[in-house]
Image (cartoon, rainbow, N blue to C red):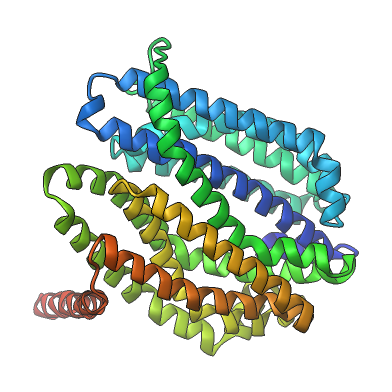
Length: 428
């Protein structure tokens, strides 16, 4: 909200925000994809009884994968940065990607420590690392926007990100003192098994995140530079609103993955099915009312979050918000299939859906120009919902009626809790 208004006071502020949005999209794409090779395999293998005596070897293999993936991205940003900025018609990306090499290097320990804490259910420590990291960036944005507006530039924002991430690494380093690797214990067999498990998750994350960000990349490459930057900025505003709605789904996926790995070993697939249905029902109970409110008042939401310069994003938001209810299904789908040892199925589904989304996005932008990516997103979510439910029925025996049953039960529990509180308050 603050950055959008800060950019709006500059010449071509909407276009500048579009470049920043594209830069963030590229970084987020890399970070999420790398987690596919890193996070789920590490947590999975640390939780398997087969590797109970090889936890050091698992950590060492995870670190090798982490460093190798980061080096490839550094090569992409340094050698291919100019080409990427040319394709996206955003020359400002070149120096930003060059400076982001430092950011990528710092992500190596940050991601490694975060995964260790997730594997040991130490979510509160992860929270504080993210809190400090984002708080430093947030305070810096406020200072650049209101106190030193002459220094509000894309490069300074990249440098601010690096400083904030360094603080997060420091906190995680202290938080993982009892879990960190002591010495390097490489085992080629463990490495091979982790890589073969993780390669499907890596591919899944790659294609899934490409599908979610096609509206940014294809819009920037197909439309003229000025129009493309504007619509990238509009789609980024809508994406940020969707990201806020995704918070419960992402949190649930992070918690359920290690839990499902453990549950499958102790209680079998039936318990995993119950966790999926119960969690999906609870998540929908949280986000359905919020989505309906946003659908009813899109212009109000856009005005509050971004200001009057972004009112053209209101129909995009309204068009996509209801169908975004499929997104929590996607997050839980991937987490559950990886946990039960079906990363291949998850991968192939992601590839097919991504190809469909690519074709739909290109067709939408060709026929409808700027709004076309929004129409493609609606079609993608509808097709995704049908496919994911069918796959879940096959592998986990999920029943859709149970999801809605738990959704209604969540409302009943909430009203019962509120009623007890009111009675207790009135009685006192």
